[in-house]
Length: 329
Ligand SMILES: [Zn+2]
Image 1 (tube, protein in one colour):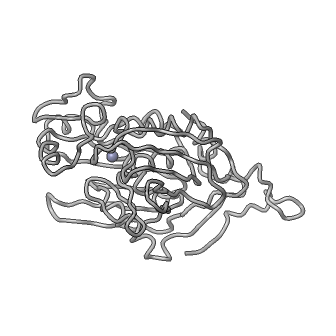
Image 2 (cartoon, helix red, strand yellow):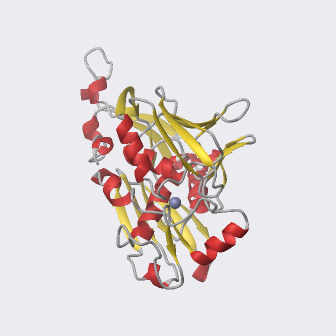
Image 3 (cartoon, protein in one colour):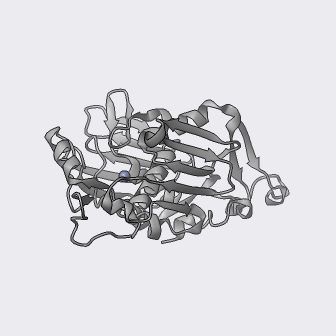
């Protein structure tokens, strides 16, 4: 791993100090904001308080319900369980289902945030990232006096699992920007009749409109089985697309024609953002999920020559649309 700024001598003033106004700056919230909901799996009531945080703080959860509050900083290694959802932990303290909130942070380019939480699961809200986007936007986004540090992928890294019909893979390749291309392959009448492949470019500024509203989904058979095991207790038609063997049961139908694959992109953005910094890369995946996405991050970090940390001292050298990402709705 090399550390360098995409230097731009023109952006330095005569004294050699960067002109902060033109730097692509780190972002936090302008004010505190709160949300209350239930956890998808626990069914438990949970309260979130999102707080502004200083430069280079990163994103951290803080379990404030424990006798001694415990902070859990976002890192690839903090992810300790990827069955059903991404769980992060520090010692015995954990927070489940972090991916939709992390996706909203990635979509709006939030670098520094302290998230106080009163239970071990992020509230599911409407099953998408749009409520989190709304919360973050309502609190306002503040530009900070330090450059955003990106992880720029410098050569392809790939992880695979299974073979033949069970094959899944995910890959990061060099790209000046951040785009995701995802393909699903569900053998289900409803899903397979929708678009199964989608590509999204973060620089387009359309995250909130095109990705954030895509909901998580499940099948009635699975839901019954999960409930019998004490899972999905907070799940239902208000926070997931639920299907039986032939149709979507939600009265309003789908929010997008290709809502399933868009939700997989939403999830991947959240899963990848736990690395703690925004990526400059092209992510491509076939039937990937939380586990493989996390393996991909660990594989990248294990190969020190596959990435470098970069900053943009002049916004003009950043990928198109990156300076505007947080402002777009
Ligand atoms: Zn999800």
